[in-house]
Image (cartoon, rainbow, N blue to C red; front, side, top):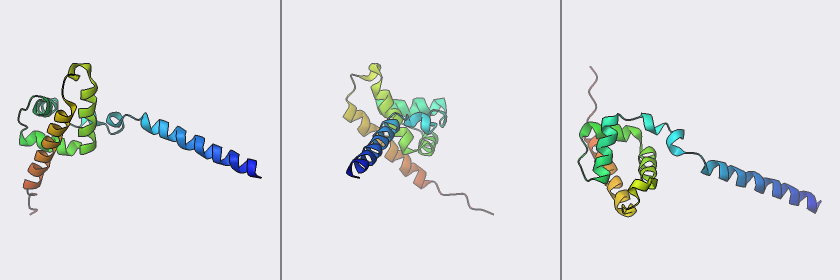
Length: 117
């Protein structure tokens, strides 16, 4: 009977580890359809604000917040994996990305909804 319990425990362990491996391989950008949720203009504007310290317009801030924090962070991290950006200080870029996100969420809070007739 003890050997049967060992087999059950081993089976559960195999299922759990294979699930963890599969979950790790899921690309959050593709899983959340992140690459199609913003206009190209706003993608460039947000990129420039993070990597070149430019300013994000209110319109692009609204697009960024609609994109969502998960997609925003995933896209920034994916960009940092590109060899063209290997010389950038990761902590500085992540800090700027957080600042841009926070600024944009504040802009979104300032917009009052249109009153219904």
